[in-house]
Image 1 (cartoon, helix red, strand yellow):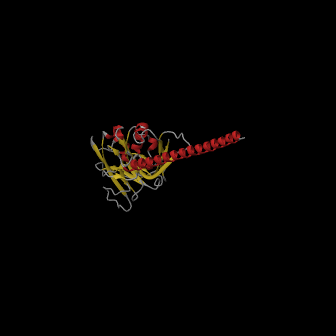
Image 2 (cartoon, one colour; image 1 turned 135 degrees about the vertical axis):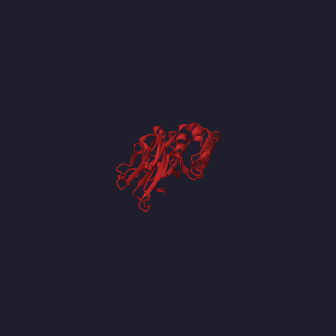
Image 3 (spheres, one colour; image 1 turned 45 degrees about the vertical axis):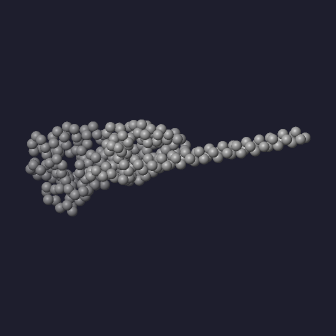
Length: 283
């Protein structure tokens, strides 16, 4: 009987020991998992805040695909716009995502994707990075300013401009640009109008040295091609004035390369937008 009792006791001890060992292993796995999640949350938070608050090193790293990436916009005064995303830099980041993000920013340990989602805009969202292949994805989101193709904007008619017809600026908005004949070989000029302004807005386009009667034209399109409306006084250049019959309308003068994708010739693509920048991360 004693042998049987001892055997039973040993079996019970082994069972208890097994349960304790399994519990300890599970607890250790949970601790390790929690630590991994904490590390990922900390690193991704640092990375996303760094990306949207500095333009990278050098500032124009996106032109060469080298350096330390950053996405923040640098304005015309050379100042960094905090909490902002440059569309051109985001696209450059996506073109070499593994090298610039997975290897450089996350030390080849964390998989990620990034998405720029426009708020109150007709512009489609932009997503770069890897495909989500995990059920356990950590998500971070920041509200940012995004610029898309704003670098192609020459004049914004919501800002004060100059007028050569002495129009009352309480009822009009006027501005001008200088163009050389050679520019028309490489660039297309457009007047872009927000859909809310179309049909309610009229315009006059004329050159300072071309003297002829000018009449108002109704804006029946939100994309007005200007190259064929530019009249040159001589063989070199022209100063072109654009007059709109409304104060501070939602309208822009842009100059884009000849090979620019015409599908993106919309007012919203050339203004500063309020956007949501989303970073997804997983192991």
